[in-house]
Amino acid sequence: GQQVMQIPQYQHVQEGEDFTTYCNSSTTLSNIQWYKQRPGGHPVFLIQLVKSGEVKKQKRLTFQFGEAKKNSSLHITATQTTDVGTYFCAGRGFYGQNFVFGPGTRLSVLP
Amino acid sequence: EAQVTQNPRYLITVTGKKLTVTCSQNMNHEYMSWYRQDPGLGLRQIYYSMNVEVTDKGDVPEGYKVSRKEKRNFPLILESPSPNQTSLYFCASSRRDSSYEQYFGPGTRLTVT
Image (cartoon, rainbow over all chains, first blue to last red; front, side):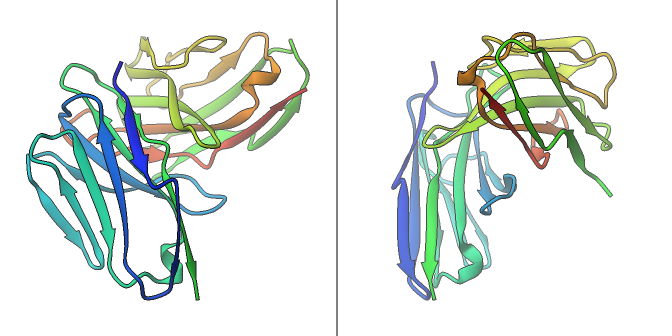
């Protein structure tokens, strides 16, 4: 079945440094979503990417969908303490109705 | 306020004692889903429902049951809980259109001893 991996598993950065997490699927995806989960909280939707090579920005966050639609990345510029949390990607195949989540990347930001 | 609610938020039970975790959404969403979250494994889908009376297995359905008799409710049933079902459970809902943006409930932390 479809598998979604993410690297790194953990990332510790100093406030102001950049951060990137990578998501890789074993199969070609129809679309991919990114979620953020604060410590003790629930996942919150950030964005969805649909088109091959798509790039979307939300303030300091940049999301990319690979040309082959099998990988994606989330880049945060100049991290802040409010960026702390676990970032999940979730991919949906062409023939399924459900999303498969990656294991997440936990980001710690040191002030 | 648009939201997904779950009850209870915390539950400690014993092996074999049937339990139900309720989930309700007030956004008129067609799609609802249950996930379990375990350290290092992310969110794994248990069951999902495309609409009333339409349910299907996710990736880890063993030991769980669901029903969708009303659009707003999607309870998760553990007929005979076992310790390996100790986990954090999330219910989620979304519209059934191209976005499928999922709204998650606050989570239910279940411990089975």
